[in-house]
Amino acid sequence: METKYIFVTGGVVSSLGKGIISSSLARLLLSRGFRVTIQKFDPYINIDPGTLNPYEHGECYVTVDGHEADLDLGHYERFTNVPTTRANNVTTGRIYQSVIDKERRGDYLGKTVQIIPHITDEIKRNVKLLGNTGKFDFVITEIGGTVGDIESLPFLESMRQLKWELGSNCVCIHLTYVPFLNAAKELKTKPTQHSVKQLQEVGIQPDILILRTEKDIPLAMRKKVALFCNVSPDAVIQSIDMPSIYEVPLMMHEQHLDEIILRKTNTPYSGEPDMKQWLSFIDKMKSAKKVVTIGLVGKYVELQDAYKSINEALFQSATHNGYKLRLVSIHSEKVNDNNVEGLLKDMDGVVVAPGFGQRGIEGKFVALKWCREHDKPTFGICLGMQCMVIEFARNVLHLEEANSTEMNPQTPYNVIDLMEEQKSISNMGGTMRLGAYNCTLKAGSKVAKAYGSSQISERHRHRFEFNEEYRNRFEEAGMKCVGENPDTHLVEVVEIPEKKWYIGTQYHPEYSSTVLNPNPLFMSFIKAAIDNQKN
Ligand code: GLN
Image 1 (tube, rainbow, N blue to C red):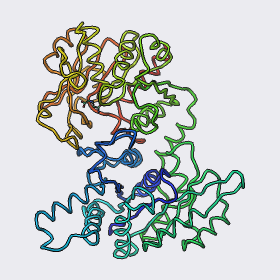
Image 2 (image 1 turned 60 degrees about the vertical axis):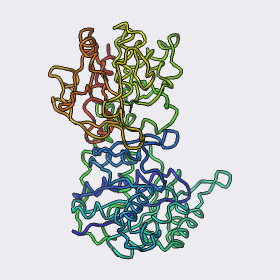
Image 3 (image 1 turned 180 degrees about the vertical axis):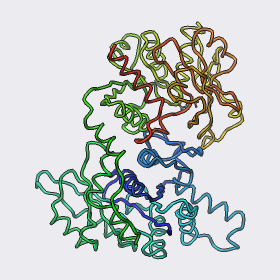
Image 4 (image 1 turned 120 degrees about the vertical axis):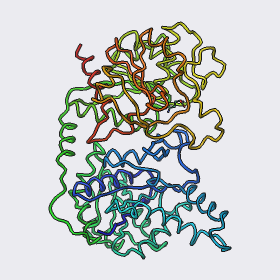
């Protein structure tokens, strides 16, 4: 079949959950046997979000092919199980960079280069790139930001042109917000009407409206919205707040979102989506009674989205193990020798988070020392793994000033050091060791047992590494290097086998954890935490 294109725009306010709606729709279409991918356009000028800090932008997600991406791509993968790539996340910066490169090469043959048609053509080329691979029946394109923003105009103009060119092979979903005014005890649809008007002003008529709301919107009110906005009444759908984002696909299906899309795009279909596995996950989630408590030690724990993929991976694994997850945020800057016991003793397991720079690092060492000495199941991820190594060097190998050269370039014991190929790099953007690399796991290690395999591939995002020169000293003292890159022999996993579960990974296993395929190492960690609780 010809590829169909679905655009998802947002209006009224930001953070309405376009990513969750796109992911939910993709889940439903996949469950009907269609091949689906989701991409996101971000209207900011940065080439990618890799250089943005978590206060600006939440977590930075990493694709298999090494692209530093918007965190919505994490949702896409968690819902769909379909890996994303660089082509799934494009910013205004990338669009302009590519147009300017073409201009410098002389590709435009002396023409004046303009937003229309050159920038819009480049946007359209990027929309169709995925469709043209022949691998997808549906390409869902989420436009970041809110309708009415100056910076999203070129994207909307491209969308208008594509709708015109593609006819019924292109559909626009517009997501808005219907506030409830407590004083008037009323839901208000006026902002939605205004938002649709703004879309119409730039020549786009939405085909489907999804109204985000905290209260049930009466049918009569939905009909009114349909009438005012030129949308058929059955295509006005409400998205009421759900206890879990993973229930959104079911709520969308109840209101026939998938069928409306299939009808509007003239796509033949029959029967119902096969949501068996998904429903079984939701069942487990709802029926879980027992609680597993995990402490997450990091410097951004007050930010809801900073460790998104880790939170979700823990939640998925807890659910698959039949437990509710209680995630306790532990601010690494606030952990010290006096309070560490109080903060950690009631945790069934502890995760030490990834990160960059000095802030909060000493607290991570204190937490790790306590966990190691009290045999708590402990999981160090990226910087968390590097901290495990440094703490072990300081307190077991008695190399008191051991450090990473990231934190102290003059340290006499550089147990974590800059990777050789990073030494000549001065640009910050997109230059880390990024994306999926193979890793060979040592037979008999806990980590190999967890994966049930000695050959794995996981995603990375770092500049520093375990310093090979110290390997023997660590191994003799009980911290084993149990995973390494088969080509470069970089150490990717450390483990203290005599502990219940004390494992650090240089890679980020959270990126590959999905609802239907939870990451094996997270599964194993949660099992260890549950066992620890029972004892
Ligand atoms: N700052 C460390 C490095 O660059 C760890 C990075 C991370 O935790 N993602 O190697």
